[in-house]
Every structure is written in structure tokens, then in C-alpha cells.
Image 1: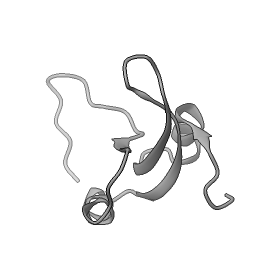
Image 2 (image 1 turned 45 degrees about the horizontal axis):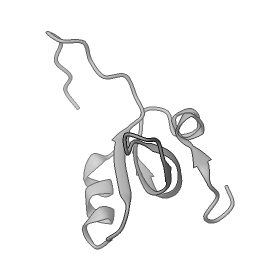
Image 3 (image 1 turned 90 degrees about the vertical axis):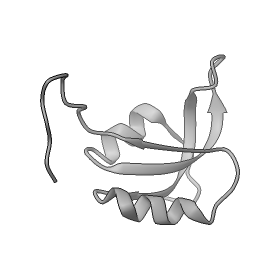
Image 4 (image 1 turned 30 degrees about the vertical axis):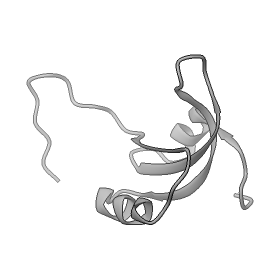
Length: 77
């Protein structure tokens, strides 16, 4: 991936499946939801992403690209 490459959220989900991702938001929809961004950090370990986010400011988004368990199910890591 090129440095500072702008990616759509769909492409981010495809490239970084089942990972926590921190992006700098470049474009939002009319509701303020991110549409495109540049990757700052990604990891399967959520704490790594929280650590990367701690010192940053600006228009950032942090999200998980995997399946969210259905109501009534529990997940252990």
C-alpha cells in the first residue's frame, strides 16, 4: 500500500478483514459517517490501536472490520 493512499471503507474492510483499524477521515457522507480515509494503524489487537490513537488529533475513525456477534452470543479473545 502506498503511503497516505486514500481508501474507501469497503476497500479497508476488504484489505484488513477482522482487524481494528484507525484512519484519518478524508471524506464523510451527509450524516458525518466516514466514506474514505488513509490508514494510520491496523491490528488484530485493539489495545495497539488505542495506543496509536492516544497521541493523535484530528478527524479520525476507529472501527472493527469483522463480524459483530449477534445479540445473545459472547466472544472471548
